[in-house]
Image (cartoon, rainbow, N blue to C red; front, side, top):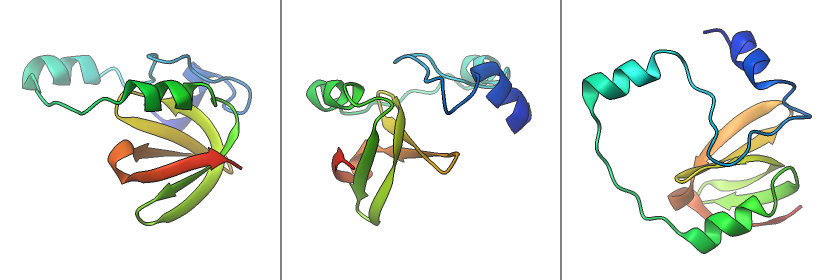
Length: 103
């Protein structure tokens, strides 16, 4: 699937945000999951995730162990957030985040 097809299936990224728990993935993922049957665990922080969800579609500064990023929060999943900066989606895993704040 090309980037354009992914973007088309999701809609205009600047106007549409997927609701929590809804993700864009390729058609190969279900087969890969079935074949590999991966198993892993993560430490979920419900208050952290809930607080992020309150800021969907808002501009945030996210400070990571490698520095700060500023963009629009366009997704919050169980294990990472999606920050969109100048039309590019960055997927940042929570263990790498020190804090976030409204930009």
